[in-house]
Amino acid sequence: MKYFFIVILIIIALLFICTYFFVRKILAAFGADVRKKRIIALTVGITAAISVAVMLAGGFGAIVILHIMAFELLVRLADLIIKKMCGDRYTGGFSLWKKIHSISLIPIVMTVAVMILGYVNMNNVVQTNYTVYTEKNIRGEGYRIALIADVHYGVSLDRDELHEKCREISDKNVDAVVLCGDIVDNSTTAKGACEVFEALGTIRSKYGIYYVFGNHDKPTSLMKGEFSEAELESIIKSNGITILEDNTVNITDEFVIVGRADKSIENESGEKRKEIKELIGIADKEDFILTLDHQPNEYKENGDAGTDLILSGHTHAGQFFPVNLLMEVIPFNDAVYGHYDIDSDTEAIVTSGFAAWSYPVKTAAPSEYVIIDIKHKG
Image (tube, rainbow, N blue to C red):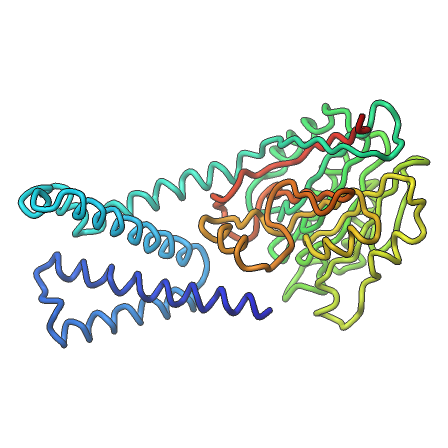
């Protein structure tokens, strides 16, 4: 939690500084003497009002404003570099650049372009492939797993588009489908919950579909919801999907799936989820052990306990640039996006998700489903 507040403070500070210079530049473009005390006071007042309004309002408007400020900072850096490189030529020339720069046209155009690309990126779900090698004595053809997480149904794809993607995944000849949480959230209607699990339940696989809850899709973690926890579980099970919540299932005599309760339950009710070593303790260590955990945490514990592969979602790969870079620096989770080697025997994959939370824009990584081929090393 402390990291969350650190990031919020950093964002507020950056927002204030960037907005101040943004407002100052606009006032200067309209002839104001920005060195006068009353103009400085006016600039500070406007900056404070914008910053407070953005932080209180939240939502998509705040995302747009933050992007404009980020691009404004980049354009200012570019202007500084041009000044340094061109010297006197800059003073007497570059009139078009100076005019465009003075009214901050470039950051606005760049933000519009990024929002359009982010919208397309959110709604265009692609296939991402990984191959994992193991020294465990698994069957010669190996195993193929489809990973889906963070659909947050209602944010992007509609029913027909979702069914189309499910048919596409069915054609991949997977052995198992794993759903790593946040398939629905507090904005999903009861009808939507039925639609999304009905669609996901149609995906063909040899050994079934397995589901772990995320921090958004159990109504106990929501401020509102049209369906109860019991109703949600009933919807999931009625579509042939197996819920794994701190329990284990053998899909073959050499392949084990461990499904963890989401870490968020510890914050909501004080209830503790089972430790990974306890869950894996009942499994044969000669089997390939696949652990599903919505949030990519406790990697060292998983490695020590004997997990071979951990699959997660939750992060949305940061969803927005440069949030993804901040998440790499400030350790909210053990991973942000992609394929990780935890130790010599344990690997992890974090998906950016089928969609993302709340905003219909995603710029940090593509929306995706993941196909993982697990093969014997050698």
